[in-house]
Length: 119
Image (cartoon, rainbow, N blue to C red; front, top):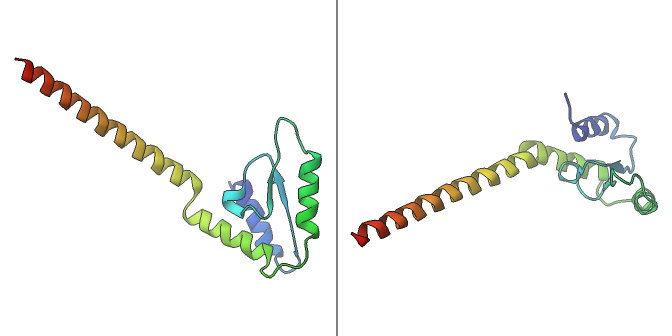
């Protein structure tokens, strides 16, 4: 099962020759995968806003890009696939868990030292 970003990237790969510009409007934040230049995160509780439409039109009607927006998005997606955002979040959680464990151990050792020194 492909994620939305993977589905979009697959479509872009298949149609890269005919796509000059594109924009992704979604209530999921796909900027980590496709890059911020082509993604607009829509508020799922409100829906599509006038500002979202204006931003999308600006992206779609911008002058010719020096680098293909499709190439940029696919490069971002490849990078995200090799180092997915969930992996970084997982590593951050693991690092914090280890730090808390270390801090607790140090605190317990200090408490033990205080108890021992009071004898």
